[in-house]
Image (tube, rainbow, N blue to C red):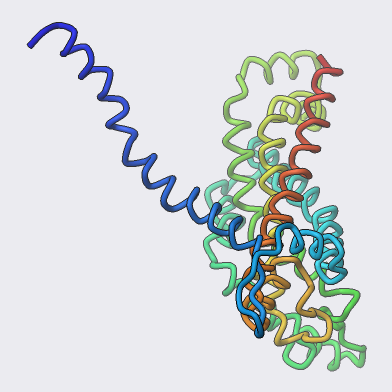
Length: 297
């Protein structure tokens, strides 16, 4: 065997090793996306069958008031949910990192345990607390002669869903932030203490800035998750059908169209529009944070 032949075989080895992943990625990720894009350019009518309509579905999506009503609702949801999903877990992680609690193992378990509960089960659990006719909160209020709160009313249901999301994800993000805080050198913290900095000042002026990249990552994930909201309103909808309409979120709207309306081509279009909007929001946030970092440096 010649030296050049042996060298060619060695050069092929990396390609052979990554080939299974590339094939799986193309088959299970790229191909479905391309198929959905192809389907979004057609319409299936009861009379006339499937026909090519070009970008008509996209024009329809940009003028679909139900879709944009749902999108506006999840933007409002994200404006409240994302800051909470950063501030609360970061505060919990700072308390843990400062060794302010003695039973740190129990502390981590208590806040992380909700993340282990499946989203559907968690929503059902909170649904029993929210439901006006079954909530123990209403029972207690009645015993006290007070009007029971309707946490699934039109005005309250969005914030009730925010509470479920925060309960489910705060512990997970706390672990992420705590892991980042553990990478901060003890000499940095000790130097600040020798300079007279309080625990509060060390947390705000040293620890939080040093985990800023992790905060950025968590915010991006939170934005993407918020704009894809589906499980909580879907599970709570039978308890509050008037407060959670079928267009409550874009994903719920698309699910309704796919299941009841059989408008699969239009649903494919909505999925691309929503993906573009999610990517745009994430890109704007990244550009803002990078610009802020350049100004600070």
